[in-house]
Image (cartoon, rainbow, N blue to C red):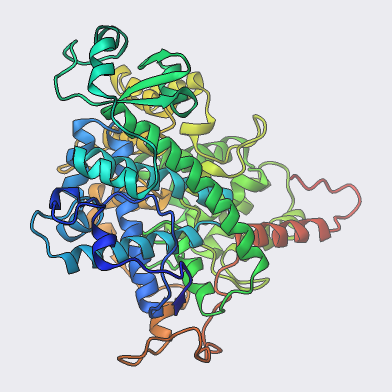
Length: 543
């Protein structure tokens, strides 16, 4: 596969050093990604491997941001602990004395993986925001770990006009800088470097009153310059992804890339819970007990409202129905559950069969396009279609509940004030998955023996809960649906064959490339069916 990019490739030494060829301390790993990759051929397998490795790195940064405060010692320690050594040396900082060839190869993989994911996550706004945030966190972490010499080298290579304040000017205004710049110990150390920037480049620092401002210039210490450059990288990356998105829409993509990019674009590296591989012994009769013991707050909220109101609106039926499918409730039992509850709402058998049964069977792939739908992940629930009104109960409670409603619900479930405050604090800061993880920890503290990984999926929450509460009830079983073969396993690649774009595309006619519909297609199909329903006169089909 040919990767497009700059026509002129720098020399080996230029790619590693910046000016001073003999000073190895000027080696830097941070990258602004100003130039795309150079022309070269890579296999489809390498294309996916590079992207998945970087995706794992970005997930580690995301988890660390939820568990700790960005920039704190705990944040740095957690990242170093979670990053495997080979990824740490490749993406953060190489070992002293690392061979030039190794450094050059690491930089090549860094650039390739970044631009691959940039292309993958340029297709919708949700994916763009996630990718930009994680890349900025990785950039900030790298830059904060560079030495003064390597930072200067990085600025020179990137053509940033950031130079330390001259000694004479620094001595003249040092008393002012000591009073106007925050330092933990109250004084500026002798080796502290300040940079004189146009105040427009440091608006965030000016707003927080962290820097001295004079004559249109902001005097920024090097430790705060990291934030200035990180903000600049965020703006640059956002503009480049917007431009790339437009180019991709106007270009004709290679068909072999589409399934690989669709797989990578999910951004969720865990189970998809669409095949029913685990058997929890789920029936409509034991849902009430399981709801109390093991449902995440979003599913428990929808379940309780269904039991109370004997009805759910369309979005809640979609979210809750797929969750039940993911934990192993059969299609027949799901139809029976919704029919029993909705009949108590005054919906007749005929109305249910016309307006609701099709939707349930559609989720299980029995009717329509017979597609295997996966339950939505936490990210998808958080970022799409918030509840609109008091009668809609889908979404994420940690995001969509008011503070008072969330506190009331947590109090009802028996959480002490200290635990409620910890959960509410995370929710108020926008760490909704972190709040859900804390909720899991507090409601399972008697069974927990290790630190909990961040909850990324409602069905992950349920699975981990059942493994703690009743591990004997978790059994493997053959999947309900035949699962699609991995994309790259279906594409036969002979050793030494680069699978370049210039070659003819492999035969993919036997692949189930239409295995998953998008959420928009699914909802359109289900809503179209509801609109086609023609109830008898006098029948009122609830929405």
